Length: 292
Image (tube, rainbow, N blue to C red; front, side, top):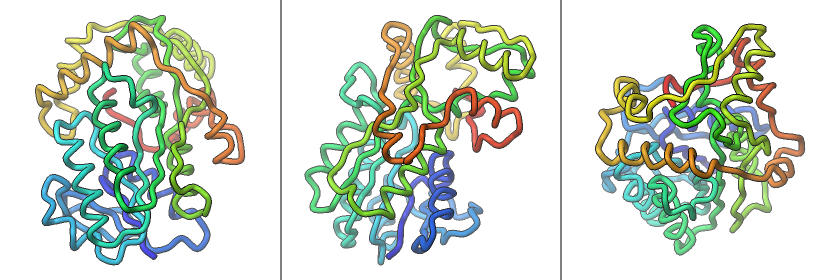
C-alpha cells in the first residue's frame, strides 16, 4: 500500500506528510509536486502537473490511497481536483481523501464553490472516499511577526469573528483517516471550536507574549496588493476576485464551526489558539503563511 499526497510542497501537504510519518507502520508515502527540485525527507517525490492529466497516470501507479488538496484560490482548482479523481480511478486507487473547506455550500465564496464541485465529483466516483472540511487555519497568523510588528492587521473589521483550527490538527486527522478503518464515505468538519474576533486574537497574543499588540483593519484592496509578491505564482484576476469576496463575506458574516468531530477524531481536545500562540513564540507552530 502506498499513500500519495498531492500539492505536497505546500504548507498543508507538508503538514500532512509530517503527520503520516509519525504513524506506526505507515506505508510508503509518495509526494506529488509540480517541480522536481523539491526536498521532502522521508518520502518518494514524483513530479506531475495536476492541470495535465497525462502526467498523473505514472505518478499514481501502485497507489492505494490519495490525499488531495488543491492550491488555494487557483482558477483551475476544479479541473485539478477532477483530473486527480479521474487519474486515481484509472490507476485503480482504492481510497481518495479530499481536504475541502468548512461549509463549502457557502456559494458566495469562489474557493467554497470549487471545493463543493470537487466533493460532488468525488462522491460520484467508483472509489471509497472521505472528505475533511477544515476551518480557517491558525497558521494564517504568523505570531512571531505579529509580536515583532506590534500589530495584527487583517483585511476586515477588528470585530470580525472567525473559527480556527491548527493545521497540525487537520494533518493528524488526515493521517488517522488514511491509516485507520472506519472512515469510508464520511464527511468531517474540522474545527477547534474557538470563535475569536481580530481584537480577541490580538489580546491573546499580547497577553501570552507580554508585548503590546494592536488589532488593525486594513483596506482589502491594499491588502491584496501586498499579497502578490508573496504568492506562489502571479495573482490572477480569479484569485483577486476570490480574495475580495472572502474578506467581504467574513466582514458580514464571520465563519463558525463545531469541534465535536475533530475532538472525536483526535481522541483529545483540539489545539487552542493560546497554545498555538505559545508554540509560535517558540518557533514550533509548523509552517505558516508569509501572507494571509
